[in-house]
Every structure is written in structure tokens, then in C-alpha cells.
Amino acid sequence: MKAGAQVDSRRIYSGRVIDLDMDRVRFPDGSTGELEIVRHPGASAVLPFVGNPSSAGPEVMLIRQYRYAADRYLYEIPAGRLNAGESPEACARRELLEETGCSADKLSFLTSMFTTPGFTDERIHLFTASGLTQGMTQHEADEFIEVVSMPLSQALKMVELGEIPDAKTALTLLLAARLSSG
Image (tube, rainbow, N blue to C red; front, side, top):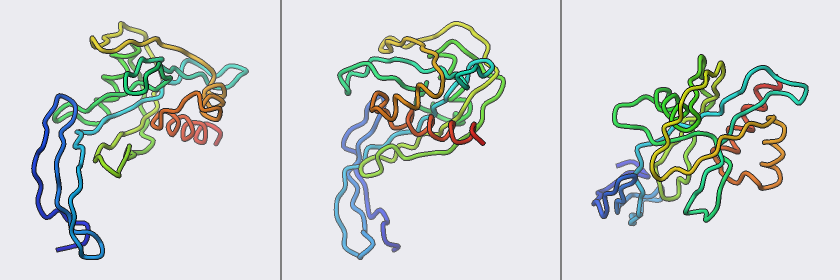
């Protein structure tokens, strides 16, 4: 058996968003132990670019959303959980439409990231979107969202100042800025 392999697993909790398993694993040194692992189907997140760049540079669309776990509103990029059998790109398009009311002509894949690999297998697929067409939002009952557009430079400054503490949003903004600067 290879190091880091699962020896066995038992489901402790099944919920609407996550499941919790107790896994017995073999560590790289050959010892075994138990780890609580949050199972998540994965998600997609998308940074929408708005129109043509202005003198302040490219403009992006963020959402300002109430997050109970953070006990405050956070600036984020549209994101959501993958449905069974749904591709990451289809999820990104769906979440963009649901949360901002926009559809995109072009979606570009940036990368995939683990959110917190110390206790969850959740992986988020990050995209940018361009060629937006405005439609109607389709917020879920527990989503309290305001759509906010701003120059990418302003969003990057907010990351630097700790005003955007959401990891998926910060990483996507930083990658998009690097790509847009050549």
C-alpha cells in the first residue's frame, strides 16, 4: 500500500452541501491515523471582465455577498458548487448568470485550487469571463448579493489592504492581473 493511502473510511454526516468522513490513512512514514475529511463535490468561480478597458485599466465585476460564517459581507467573484455530472465550465457559466445576471461569450480557464487541503477535498476551478450580456439574476433564497463593478487595479488594492480576504477571489484577481499585464 502506498504512503498517504486510505485504509478505510466511514461516513459521519451527510448534508446538503458537504459530507464528513472519518478516514483511516497510511501516512508517508508508514504509520496510520484517523483524519476527519470534509467531502465536497467541487466548485467553479469566475471573474467577469466588463466592457472595454478604461483609462483606469480593465474593469471587473464582483459581488458583495453576506457570509454567515464570516459574520459580514464579503467581496467575492461569482462561484458555486458543481452539480452532479456538471463540468466546471458549465458551473462557472451557471453561477455567473445566477449571481450577476450575465452570460459570457468567452470563458477562459485559469487554474484549479484546493481551498483548505488540511481537512477538505474541495477544489475550485477558476475562470475569467468576457463578452458579457446582461440578463436577470437568479439568486437562491440564502443569497444576499449586490453586484459591484470596479477597475481591476482597485480590486487588487483591496486584496493588498485585506479588504478582500476571500482566497478564491484574491487568487483569481492576482492571476487575472498577471495575465492581463502580459
